[in-house]
Image (cartoon, rainbow, N blue to C red; front, side):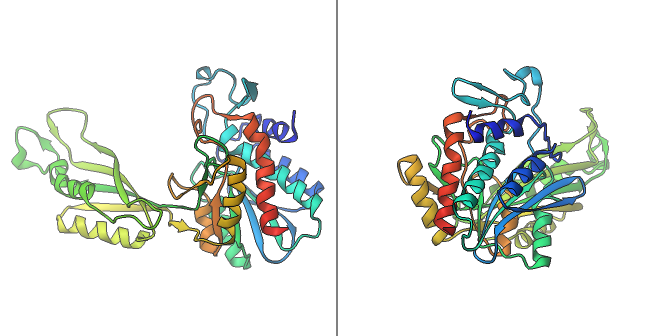
Length: 375
């Protein structure tokens, strides 16, 4: 087996369901120390974070990844144990194979090779790993970024190893992400018997016009390569379970994915004003997952475009689609961020897998990116 396949299997075998790292970062740190990296453990609460650096000064290139995984779900639904990695028909199966222990293993191998080939390279090559990407994302890269601000730690470029490819390795280059803002709306009414509606106030009926307006609103027409901002209502809950009781309260969960036309405070103000206009007796709580970020044309995109075209056989699609990633916490530090990783077809699914051929190509891909920026 190849070095990267061996390391990926070792990582997958550690059941690091978020926020448990299960020793993955210690394994990586041990390897990187032998390669000449300085390694610092940053533990906040139950979350492990690893900051490993080689070289000094600017420019600073960060390889960003996570060692935690989502729960596997029912073990009996898997063809093999999700934490007993297995190669079948050219695929490596196991929880985290694609998201993103394969990329983490490839990062480590590429970093080792780069340090050996360029021991006196300009600038700093860094690896940042967290065990809180798939969970609350509070004490992971979000908290590390706060520490970096306090220290004055500079970051010029960041490559996140999220599984970004669609059909073949390198066919998509992620150059930004939308922001994510979640709201919890509680609308108060008066509970009563359905036969006596005049003695009650139905919060579902009262809320319906406001929710319809929210759902139908056209927020914008998109921004450069970003799609239009969208709002989705994801959950409604009211009532006692009986069909003859008017509920006394309605709870609504919704989420906005937004482009750089907006920021969280402006969206919150717009929605609060809409609800006030409908004169609802309500409470509204917000969770800001992260603001949008976008990497304009420049050295990072140019190098990435050339490298990915070599591996994929054609220039990559350059996209800002998908969900969120930890790059949303690094971009506000002034860093330009891209995401490059394996095919994402099976992430978070039963029988998650990655092509062995893609996995074995990943260290060379990441090494080419590093050398294009630092060598």
